[in-house]
Amino acid sequence: MNSGPLPTVLIVDDTPQNIALMTGLLKDNHLTRVATSGERALQAAMLAPLPDLILLDIMMPGMDGYEVCRRLKADPALQHIPVIFLTARTDAGDEQRGLDCGAADYITKPISPPIALARIRNHLALKTASDRLRHQNARLEAEVARRTHQIQQTQDATITALASLAEARDDETGNHIQRTQHYVKLLAQALRAHPRFADFLTGEVPDLLFKSAPLHDIGKVGIPDAILLKPGRLTPQEFEIMKTHTTLGRNAIAKAEQMMDEPSSFLRFAREIAESHQEKWDGSGYPRGLAGDTIPISARLMALADVYDALISRRVYKPAFTHEEAVRIVGEGSGTHFDPDIVAAFLAIHEDFRQVAMRFADDGGLPTDKH
Image (cartoon, rainbow, N blue to C red; front, side, top):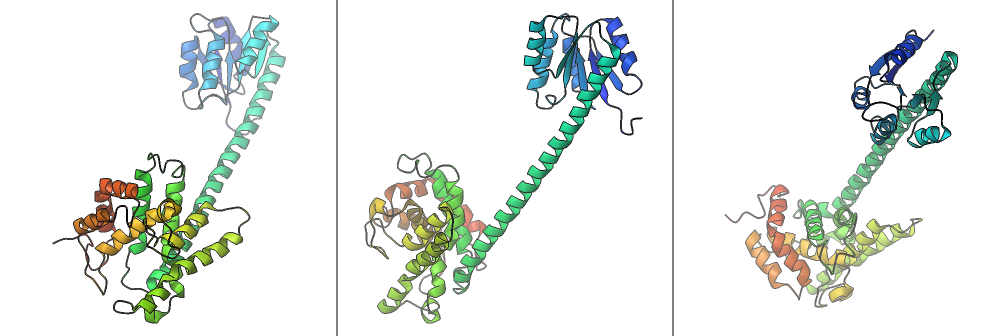
């Protein structure tokens, strides 16, 4: 005796006698649904609950059984339903054609009721096992996706926390981390189609740059408080020490890279940004005096983002510039401080920068407020 719900079988045939025969055979242990044409079969197959098995005649007016089977197997919602051809066509070529369409079995008329029921029972059992396995796989995939997302969130939070260690020692930087990482991603997205940057800014690179950008000043954790927290401009000697935050950050991230079994694009970008975001296009920056295209693209993007944010932010040695003033200053740095093409991209999307600055404004007010 069947302890679970009765399986639903869709019978597709245009001959009343055949329909009566099959419904009579199946009535005790199955629920039956009937369609008398190919078109109606496709409609009946989509009704809830979906059939567990379809018995399909080949020779019908209009759409024949072969086409019905092909359409069923092309529909993701229906393709898992086993189809058994039940037909008077006994040629081996017809059977091969039916199986090639995706049918699970092929029974010729006149049928042997015990054999037909046994084969129907076997295919229903196979479908039950297949459904169970497919649902189990779907649950496993969903769980893997959930765990992966959870791990990624944990990694992102850890990175932000580490970056904040450096920023927390300087109470004037506020939401600098959030703003600059969004600026970098905006620039990367704006330059994806640019011939000079298209080969680099592919796939997930803009997202990786977004995630690595917060580590640009991680080396500040190695700068003495007397210098990092000095309430005023630094002396030349103090500035030389401050400049070492770039190499301190690079060295720390390089050690992390050495622990990896495989190269990490995220850590590479973080290392490049930490070391080279203070380099200038004309070679007058630090720590290595790189110029032009020898400066990593990741660092060139960060350089502009970092300077723009410094301009619109208040410091003990300067007031906050307005957004318009910051845009003008960045524009004037094209070809000297910054890569000219990156500046051009910035000028095209600078209003997006303003929106980011407003969204992550510090408690003291909007850094772009000019009133």
